[in-house]
Image 1 (spheres, helix red, strand yellow):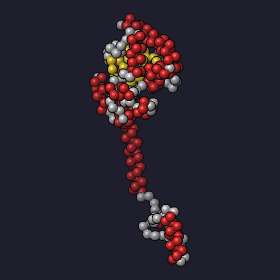
Image 2 (cartoon, one colour):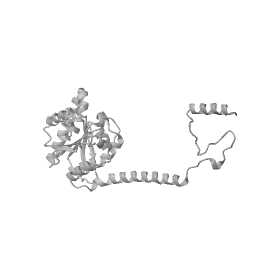
Image 3 (cartoon, helix red, strand yellow):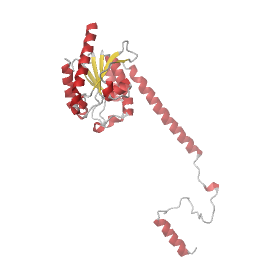
Image 4 (cartoon, helix red, strand yellow):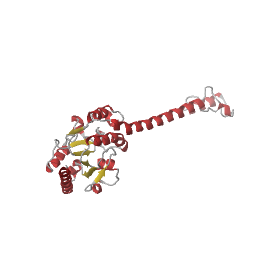
Length: 267
């Protein structure tokens, strides 16, 4: 091959993007056969290090899950729980949230309500259920002669999902140990799960909220002597969009009031 032809070939290769040699020295693959020694193989030490790092990461994730599952159980007070939640960095939602939204109301109340997650207004103020849905929840409580002084309110998630999107399974899982400890510390007589996310995650059910609501369940935390009477209702945000569900919600509220009254009668 002449010099002119070689130069033309080089220009063609450069135009195609092949503008550097792969090996340290130029190799004419049309003349020389590549020997096995010339084929680069991964350094065994690099592979071993990579496997060790992968194993280390997997082990770290497993340890984090084990720690998360056990550590909240050692918390003895609500203030300790609040501090632990505020210091917890294991949920990605915290990075985009303005505030940690822990709880509101009376922790000594016999009625505890758990919703889904903070919205924009809740994120801004750091208090659960203070937006439009929260105002409706207040009216729902008033219908059964309750208010925030005679009820305790929190959420499954302590931080707002961006754009009020649905929380992921992972986000729910990392918060659940804190939520379960929250329930154990409050020990309400009646637990109301507000909306599908709270109902499904805490009752470990897959049905939709329409099938879950209107029934009573026994919520057993193990450390509580008596299982907690638990039910689910439609989320107020859902009711603002689906006004035709308010009649069913009224029936649920009456059932909750009746259950609370029965507990008061038994003392």
